[in-house]
Image 1 (cartoon, rainbow, N blue to C red):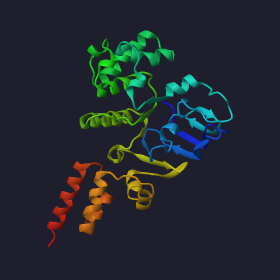
Image 2 (image 1 turned 180 degrees about the vertical axis):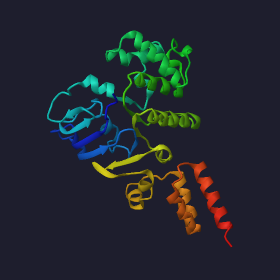
Image 3 (image 1 turned 120 degrees about the horizontal axis):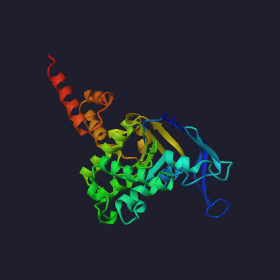
Image 4 (image 1 turned 180 degrees about the horizontal axis):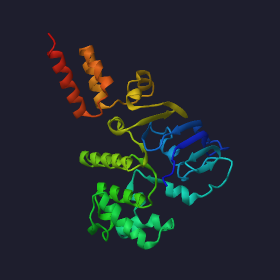
Length: 297
């Protein structure tokens, strides 16, 4: 039976070096609910606590202030240890920004098998999963016996992801998933994330690439100044001029073009209501709008 993987955060406070002169409060009294089976983007300026926040979801970091609930699992601030930590690691998988951090075995097969076996999956089943998820991500069986260190950046990213998918988590966290990838690799990664959502996963993505947020995001969380600055759908966030200006956030190219066109002719403001996600959709909507305009007598 599929778990209800709604994630709820209540009064989470993250403090580093507490009680020392170097004490730093990263987030203060942070509360938020995240719907399951959505792609949630977490954005904000460098150092705002994006990775730190999401690292709490699978227990890589634990705060003693506030509670996190993921389905039927809880991370309680007033408890020193996380109960059922293995169940939590099975439920929530994290793909780091640099795939090299997750690749350390002499073959790709062993690397992909490591997580499942460490969490109690029999070796025979882990081998089947290694092949299945490697193939799912576009790499054939011949890669299984190859060294992960002789791969391209994009291939390393796929192998690292296969290792997380082989654990079969319901929630996946991606930290800058396209860092270092070329445009084709970036497009492939966005398609992979979309397909994971279609398979029922709940996805969290940290990125500095706002085109990605607009392209596939369901919800956007903006954090900074130790708190939630805003949350909502992509167009709601990127048309909030005060938020963008005060926090030095970039806009996706699509919205920049719409803003420029609207200065020339206010009719193009209609494009904000149509909410094109990418350049192709924008071009189509502009064509239809101009055709409609030109057809009027």
